[in-house]
Image: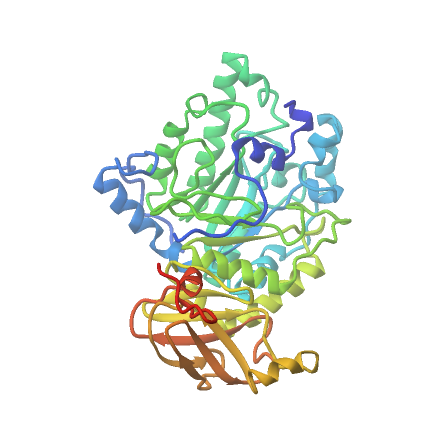
Length: 474
């Protein structure tokens, strides 16, 4: 596919990572100085125990964080037509460069982003440092094409780092390997001298990011077009990164294994034992797109977060600030609503361990040890439209079929109010619930079980008594 017609989504389809929402399987201080870099290798069963142990050490906080803020902001925000506008509209480099003079984010925007993310329950952030357009939001000695010299006269990366540290969020840098602005950004694929120049430039920018901003927690590479990992000298680059930042975690988008996988715009657990993080937009665009009104609801965001936590993964949710850096009202309102829910139900996400088993049409599950959290997103109330149900259930009931352990007690998580239940071999029914959902947009029932809970819907099909038949032999 030609570059001019290749969108980010098209590129990811070629990698086999795009698609619709997929079910999750069962499965502030500066460093004191450079340290010995851990050896880089694709994560797998053949890794030395020392490599696995070091990754577990570095990623412990990340697994506990669960929820992060993605920030896509750059010259493309001025156009308001998505971050691929330069490529998809064929804008000449000389014309696109003129946008820098109009890139004037208002003071304090990075703190606004971070405070909004923190209020939403996010524990870390990942911000653009250089997107595909090649414009750096940080001060660089390697290029004048950067915000401090050609735009607002400010190092926005430094402002972001300071804001994140002030609010207690972990700091992540997004960096696009692909570069539409640099003269060697495309010809490096066929010209070895150009490749050497461009790789040296890329490694140099990454070195600046790893050197000039104190302790960095995440390096989030993107799009490795047009070179192979060997041509990018990815292993050499990551070895340098770990030498400068021995506690950092790095994603998989340089073509080498990295510390975690990055499904985009869909939720899909990695193979067992492999860390993963779904990154997703609130509408259909990463960068600001003024006409894109396909907004996800707070309920959808919460359900996605539950799905990621259930599968042992993280959820990196994007904002695309406007030209002045302000957050679109729809995104701000959604994050505020999600934050209110997280303030009441956060432990069911942050403390969640991978949950194996099926789901329900009206609910999903997370768990911690022997505690099952039933996240009811469609509340089954006995409303006037469903009066016929009252013949079978005189009060509102949440029923879970195929729970493979005995229930000891249950309560509404947010309020702590006790919930009555009855259980047989086939299902457990939580009874006496109010007609109106006690929480919005998702109500959580905390269920204490005798052993680690799993849900097997097939168990109902195989063991439920049939009319005039008895039970089906398994």
